[in-house]
Amino acid sequence: MHWSDVMAQRLVERGQNHIVATGITPSGEFHIGHLREILTGDMIVRAARKAGLDAELVFVVDNADPLRKVYPFLSEEYQAFIGHQLGSIPAPDANGHPDWNRFETEGWSYGDHFLAPFLEALAQIGVQPKLLPNLAAYQSGKFAPASKRACDDPGAIREIIERVSGRELPEDWFPWQPLDSKGSLDGVIVTGYEYPMVHWHDSHGVEGVSDITKGEGKLPWRLDWPAKWGFNGITCEPFGKDHGAAGGSYDTGKEIARFFGHEPPAPLTYEWISLRGQGAMSSSTGNTIGPIEALELVPPEILRFLIANSKPNKAIEFDTGMGLVNLADDFERWSSRDLQEELSDSSLSRRQRVQLEDTATALALASPTPGHVVSATSVSFRHLALLAQIKTEDEDVWTSLATSHDIHEPTVELQDRLRRMRSWIASPHFPEEMRISVRQTPSEEALAGLEAELHQVISCLHEALSEHPWTNDGITSAFKATAESSSTGMRQVYRVCYAVFMGEERGPRLAPILANCDRTEMLELILDCSNVIERRHSPA
RNA sequence: GGGCCUGUAGCUCAGUCAGGUAGAGCGUCGGACUUUUAAUCCGAUGGUCGCGGGUUCGAACCCCGUCGGGCCCGCCA
Image (cartoon, rainbow, N blue to C red; front, top):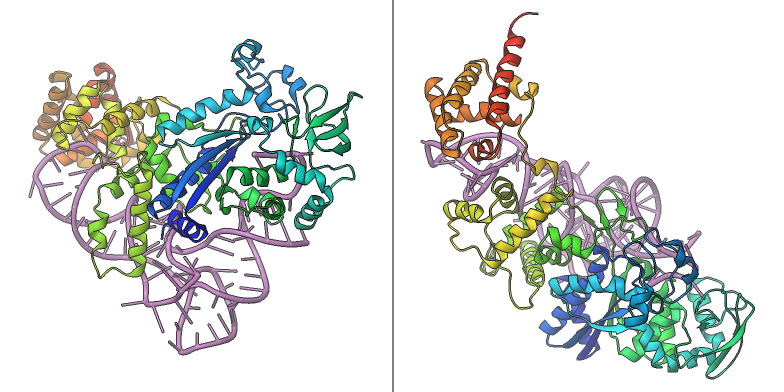
């Protein structure tokens, strides 16, 4: 059974109505790691609906969390905002300076700034969660009952956290973090409490009170999370493996939730996504692929397929090079198969059946539009990459596909894919081994691989190419002429050509590529190759 | 120190929860189309399931141990 269905079954046992939550702190650029969080949630919701449940996806925007440090993309001015809530400080402008103007005129905050492009990516990828901004939840008093419960009995909370996490809390710990005289959550000492006021003094020597029903502060994370579960009615939540560790925030959250008077949600821990060869994704080091950037390269259904077809506890290495080609072709192959038909074969072993069933489910989940299965384009990523490099005009690509693949009207999907393919090729992520490159100088190695009787083909080739027009057809004719004049087969001619022009054994159709190259340079390359061979055969 | 994940074909992984002949895809090799848009199609190749014990009629799967890899346990989401 697919992981999403396993989760849905667990939800069936809990009840009919479900709210599946995801949550991210908008502290910096979002990356595809965050996409796993939200897509995991999205896929659980789809599976739950398939199982006949009422389910909704919500996205808690943790903009009540404080700015932790001045990230490399921020100017030093942000030093003053450390400890301030992300939803109540200005967004950085293009140079990393606080954009006061937008903040004051339209209330555009730091959190909004990073959230906006992520939401745009989500729309493209077919996820439309209900947004729950956390800061607003505090300000409107939604946290008040849980906050009161905690502040009324700090000892009970302290006991749970210390026992479950095995960590000792400081003497002056209190289950409410007040905002100080400047709006920071850091360095505030709680000196007293009588509902609804928490008394404090801050690092500037100022004393004050914080109303826990009005969002003049927030709950520490380990309480914040279970409190949200309660008033939002959350019944299921996927989260990163960090929360899932023994003694981690889910463990303490479970007990604290019951203390608040509600059941914790069904958990699903997922592994991180890392960038191939570069370790974990991290906003602060700039080692990220943003969701928007990823979608420039790869269609949404393939990104979804990656998540759907990987079990949540499997770490994903996101590879923007060859890995992406393989992933895309894998997707293409699977979607062109009729899995339902294959599943009707009763001789399948249990193993094979499971494999087909899970992939079929993953394919269904890969579609950005629920219920609609992305149709196979029947053109592989490799092939499209090739065409896109050879043909600069889209029309020429379609013409070519019409003859080779019998595709006369390119589908919207295919057009879309070509557009992304072009931007991928233009990006530094495009793998070198996919890039078509014609040699500048002879490849000694490739020429050495040619049998002696083929050497004369090279001079015939030079002659033929000199005499034919430098066009697609002309070059093709020249190849044929070469075969005749050297009395070898076309296959051998092509072998020679690939050795000469690309330094390879095989390659893509050469004529259109050569037609786009400089004739003089190519003819010189052939002569150079002859020289290399002669030198090798004449004793020094 | 505590805990989680992971080890299966050259590669990426299913299969472990419900024990019943070891599975896919890629790669590689061969063939076909009789010659080329790295194409497509067909066929073949390939694994003492990390290691050692135990339970069982039967173990990749359950139990115990062990080794290797990754990771989490700070007001951090």
